[in-house]
Length: 409
Image (cartoon, rainbow, N blue to C red; front, side, top):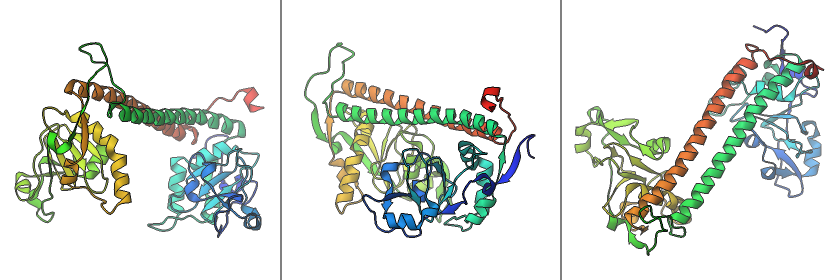
């Protein structure tokens, strides 16, 4: 149903130039050439510095697909329907064959069309028109036929202005999250090496004294898990949560629930074993260096090491120590022939040990940093959900906006 005063128009009628794709073969990167936009460059803000460049003569040959500031770029292949608006900082550029240029005419608002193309209803329509199962693609012919609900221009501008406000809030929150993560990373590197010492709550003075450097195997017990035969159904769907690396990447720091579980029989007929609550779980294969802490008794696959700290090491300090070590472990794996870890290697990790009291203080500071990031991520999720709901209301005319005489002029 078309709202009162709105029109339902094909995309081809909203443009000042024919919707077209770009360069078929851009050739090698030319340092002082003309930037071109690939489908992988599309989606949100375009990273101008990351764009590859083609030779000026190739750009001239495909000048029909040249893009200018305020044009919409649309991904035709792979992750189809991703869109970006060409920024003012990119005065001259082109496209590849996997992207399309949509130059909105003066009777319509570019930002409004951009939001319409990103709306759930329009995205579903575009996906239905696309071809291919593993590699999706939509033709220019089908794209030109996609219909959009268009209110009068002043109303388009007002709606785009409202949604842009939400986008700015989302972008600000994303920057705060990135900054908080960088601050936490720097804090970990300082606190876990002793370069920065905290205040002892018992004395009110900065912690003092040398840290002991030991092998992890000397201050913690550890074993890997196991996997029962998948063909034996009675081994699965039991009462014991069975952690996989997928569970760790999904849940992060704390794990209490898992996708799969084992029965007593499944554990006794495999190398899986029960780890007590508070065990530090450490991935040795695939997502190497991924780390979590169990909040319940559970078991794991053989890809995961269950580490139980002894009295002079607390689990959450160990967790942060291993998280801080992750980049180094991954880099070592990439540079050498050993892409996986084993229990012997992990036992040989060097770990710097302050007193338990100082460990607890370090862990509390880093936990507070985690909490700040979690709160920002929750805020971001809410903002995105609220924007989505607002788009569904505003872009369909279910909720109308008031346009002042000044805005309508």
